[in-house]
Amino acid sequence: MKSEEDSNPIVRPSIFWLLAEGGRAISELGLSIPYRKFFTSKGKGDGHPVLVLPGFMASDLSTKPLRKFINDLGYTAYGWDLGKNTAKTVFLDLLLEKIDSIYEQHGEKVSLIGWSLGGIFARQLAKARPDIIRQVITMGSPFKGIDKANNVAWVYNLISGGKRVRDIDPILFNDIPFPAPVPTTAVYTKGDGIVPWQLCMEEEDDIHQNIQVYGSHLGLGVNLSVLRIIEDRLFYREENWTHFRSKGLIKDLLYAPSL
Image (cartoon, rainbow, N blue to C red; front, top):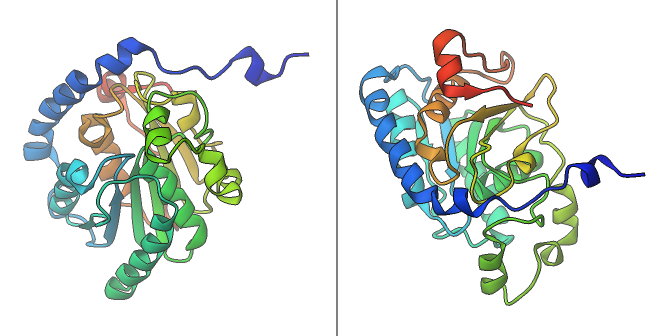
């Protein structure tokens, strides 16, 4: 008897979406500029710290526009300051130290935003420090199966000397699919040309929500729909956190029904 996974196998994103990633990301950046300049609630945030984690083989340069947006909203955005994200497990220990330092400096819980692999790190950090994490937002993060078929695994195999992801730290590997015990918003797009979108979704409940947007993987950090989600989510604390809701024409134009 076939399992659900056998009936709906996870497949590598199409070459069409992959080749179109760069152009689509540039378009998403351009479309978000008017919103970032004229329609955001600038300066109305409560100032709490927000740590933004880049994706695989990306650095803080990739999250600079997003961190500026977060600062403009009235929060305090931090980059991860670890250079390129080469998927080293030692990064988790260094980030735990950073989170502890940020919390001590501000005296407030830290929100975590992670792009792709950065979102996987964010969820693991929240599992380790749920007492000081306010919420997690992931963007195109394949936490449901980081060893499944995708269009970036060959790069990891190259820089790791041929080692598979599951061989680096089996205990960590087995824990990744489990949710963090803090409010979590998982953003994904079916137009993802890097990782299968099905792997980027939480099991929804009162504190875990999935939101489907239109766009590319590489454009998620500047995507208009994602920026609106982040602006909305950062307003909430864990005690009053609720699912994101968008209504009317904006909902129809910017958001697709989540599964």
